[in-house]
Image (cartoon, rainbow, N blue to C red; front, top):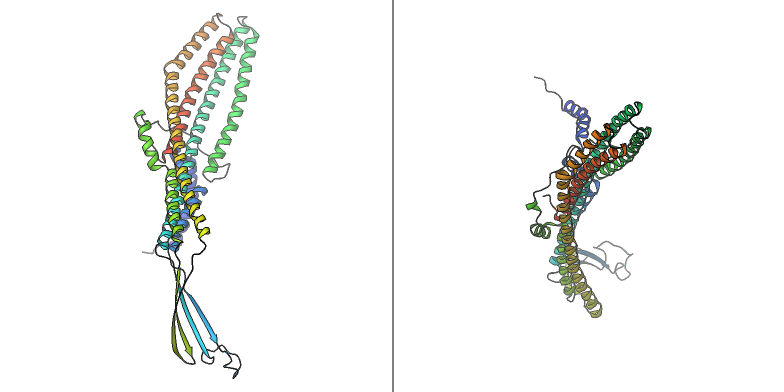
Length: 422
């Protein structure tokens, strides 16, 4: 049986990729999970910081390595006391000295430099993790905003349709002399105001879509599917401050980075104190006379640490930097825990507000509107009362959406502080 060439399979895959991409684009944006998955693979900022973290890892080995050895060659008496022209041939000069030297830092310095590079790599990894968590939080918040705006637009369009029907009722009543012409004008003005709001909301939606595409490293005008649903809020038991405080201390990338900076500052302090002791250079030197090596020399060289005032200043600098690193971590910890408490309180308030709207405010507004509509049809109330009742329903529904959005945006902030999803 004849086998299909590999290039045929390659061509098929290449032709199919655009269709797969269109299918993915058609689904992208429906859920926050799809946005996060796409951003994790495509966001240029986090990819750059991950590469920087990889680069920092690669600095660990060189930091603890010995410096390269040095080879020196000396051509002595190139004219043989004036008996010949100057030459660089080792067998024809008076003697040739070869010196091979290796610098050896004081005991422990190499290990400290390697530890410093390792902690710097941990800082780079924490920065990369923190960058992704920040991007993820912004994507979560933007998805909530897109969903809320989409639902507010739907409510506005429903109200526009209702205003059109109320205008028809007002026209019919005006035609038989049961209502004033002003009622028809009020209905028309209300529709115009709603259309104006729709224009503003559509513009806001395009702006949010542009921000989301920027977070996904996509063209600004790339399409996104309409959001279908929001994430569910965790149970209140999972939002207890005490448990989340402990998770914040253990997992927050910023605190992890600050801890790594403290460790790096400690190692830098130790390395600075090690500079009180000299570094050595050892060497071996064979000396060639004509065609044979007839002499050997061994040398040792070390620096003399005489500049004590300079070293003491560097030691005080290292101590100050260590103290600053500890205070920065303490300040970051207080700030993050305060933000955690603030956002948890906001979630709880938004949850109660939504419950109040669903259980009380919205049913009351709907009952008021139905009563006002019936009363208007029997000429017991004016048209303004009917419009006000409809506005109350719309405001109640918008309040519910805003409460949901508030709780989920604050949840995204909580997860950013935790460094993990709940």
